[in-house]
Image 1 (spheres, rainbow, N blue to C red):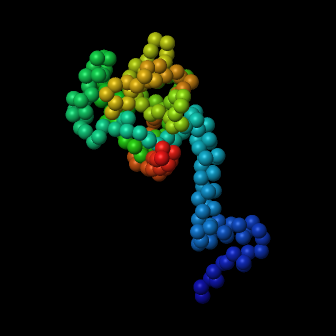
Image 2: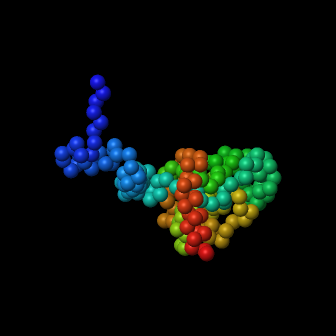
Image 3: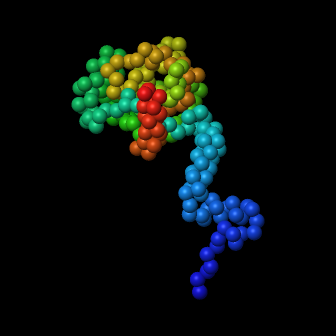
Amino acid sequence: MAKPKCTYDAHQSKPAKVWHFLAHEDSWQSFIVDAIIVILIGKYLLFPGLGLVLGTQFPVVAVVSGSMDHQGMQFGNWWGDHGAWYEKRNITKEQFQTFYKPNGFVKGDVFIVFGLDGGRAKIGDVLIYNIAGKKDPIINRVIKINSDGTFQTKGDANYDQLAFEASIRSEQVAGKAALWIPKIGWVKVLAVELVSRILNR
């Protein structure tokens, strides 16, 4: 004999009714409330907890620009277009191939970020850092460490270094990219682009 289906009204206590609404009710209202709860848990509990463990304020970041996109090119072809810039700065093709993500990455990719241990990073690391006037962090590669301990970075896809990249202080740096997850950040990318279009109308 089939077990009778449990309904909202069958529960006697308020906590039981709330649990039924959240976990068992098949309605758009329940779906919206569940989605809001998941977002709030992620933002105010999961991400801060993960950030505490990994030692960074940005434990998970989505790539929202194309500054590291190699456009699907084979490394040798990409180096043919961009390599001279690096060779002038004593970074060889062979050295670059040992760097983290030497073939770049694209919008929509996501990284798990580890905080810098004592502010240390090396040439070839991909740093996540803040600059004044930009809401989203920058995700670019270290190409030089200055004598004063500041970092120089550059996006692989850019033909030259941007002005703000010549001296990145350690206090600007949230951490370095450590684990790569492709494509799952497209929700954020689309949201950012939508907001940008609305604001620029």
